[in-house]
Length: 503
Image (tube, rainbow, N blue to C red):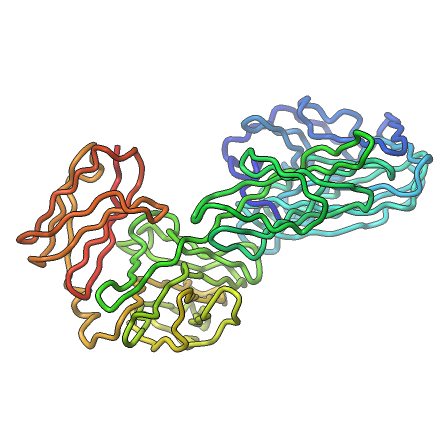
């Protein structure tokens, strides 16, 4: 899977530049692919050169132009319509095998989703042989597919059959057929075992590579095996990586399409006096939390007050599961560590979405269940769990499972020492910031006479501090770069986080 690839992140900016009428003709071009050679089609010319469309309805395949890149798209289809995109004829008689790869994306609102069937045939008189069938909807990601072909001929073709079930688009791009002996472009990029400073990078191989070149945020590294553990990364940082194969004799592949990931934050040190608190108000994206998709294609998001008055962590995706995982927490100095939070799960008819809460003493340990909530919770409920097995890299997670109800909400997450009246104090602790956004100084006011203010950037680095006096503090941000910051205001055992914007 590739996250936020260029032809899905700007769907509404894409404009169709070429429309093809229905046709049942067979492609007239014949393209020889000698051993060690590749055919690549990325539609950057704006035309489907030597590709044809077979359709009996208004449905078609056509080139669409986006910002800096083109794709071919299945469109103009009513439910039940089909159209087949047929490749040129390829002469592969000089090879025993070849690799066929491409990228695809599919977009819809509700199931049943559109279907994409990928096939091949050895001659125009041959029937189509199915390689794969896809039926998904994902508005953020694109996917790589790769197949080994061994039933080759002088009149070889591949095709993409789009079947509409009422969705929006099916996109295809970066089609490659690499003859054996060539240097196939890596596909199927993966990222796993992400920590604060490392990640395990993987990709598909054809078997004849001598090495690979990894491009990570513009810095290139040559490796001789995969998966490859990339270390010395920065915490809480976005990375994009791509890879190309080196097959010896000066032969190398095209670059793969990129995939993205983000490293974990540094460990937050929690004490009796300094609890960890997140009300998700600092940003419209998670800060030092990450979503792990367990089934389906979507994860947790920050709801920026669209459905309720303030930001919350939110999960609603139909029939799917995902975990929202915290940054590592050092809770070894906490006398009686507890987790407190609020949640809400409203029913929709007979259906209720499910929430379970987990902990792990470290990133390499198993998840352990703290509790489950499977019945309707129509209003906010506050919950407290004791945290066993305290460690210096503790993780907590909220696992949501959608049963097509009203979603799962989580808010006001606190990890710290057990305090009998802590929740009441937090609820009554009010903070205001003015002006916000600011170009210089801000005034932070609270209904508590004393307290401390710590301003951090989104990497968790401290940029300013101040002391509350008679419920007010002045913080000078004139020396800070433009962007979003977090102001953490602490009063006794209560901490509130407010988002600051420096213009």
